[in-house]
Image 1 (cartoon, helix red, strand yellow):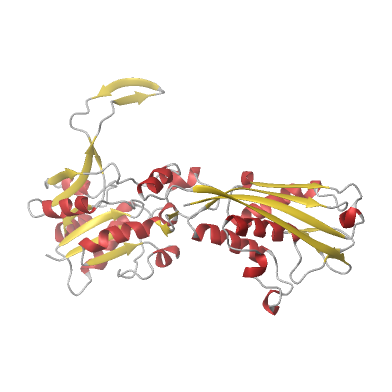
Image 2: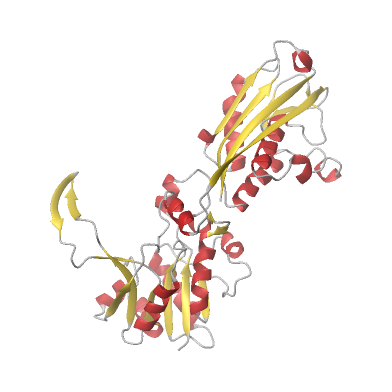
Length: 382
């Protein structure tokens, strides 16, 4: 029997997006243990199938599955049912279409091998099979914030994926039905076809809310730990250059001297982040001896620092930047600076602090010869 799998990655993950950090990627591309969630799902399926068909158009999908033996992704639809059908049609167009097909949510990264094997084994006796877990909690039906009744739970199950089917049957049912269905077993049920229940797993978690990531990290044995880095930088004033601080151009009679745009706020924040990652300092990643970085917008440096956090499977918890100067006054620009830094790091602005102090007219900052800055950054790393 030739077995295929459809891996769904076209969903928007609305509930996750509503509660996640602003600018975070779609949930199936969140890093888990240093790898995208959907890559974990693909690696769990591949040992059990002959071909794997991803469905989705996000450019991140190709990167997430890079190096794996999968078919080229096909575009999905606005509803799950549309995406499944797109995957089925792509498999049907193969020189040798499959006999059986598994359909799996790309947001379920931890699939026990025995669960997948049980679904496949059940297809020798039934046209469809799904993994499911008995409902253990008491179920209440409610209306207007009040309990209306208690629902008997004896026959209730929580459906999971991968769900398995005879390929030709599922293909034909999808072609015949355009009604909304939350899973593929519903199409077989409506057609009077038997769908077997096989034991699911409480570990087969679908990433729906950000707190689900904590459980998944524990399953993978990669509980994240906080790490803190400290940054410090100094730039002298120079006539004839714009003054750029924390990504914002500030009106002033002088700018700062430096190889790049000399944004002392961003430079020190980069150093704090690289320090938390134990990856050196900004000069290691962007050497001032290289002309490529001359007059470069320092936003590029901070974007790289944020990318390094995500590449390590981490998350920025907070960053605190302090600018030390007599002039200009930073307070009127602090909100714009926070917003810009948050935008570059792809985090919520509540995680970014920008403040200023003077040196009471002491030292080079007190003599207005330049600006100093310090920063502290804390990240979670697996």
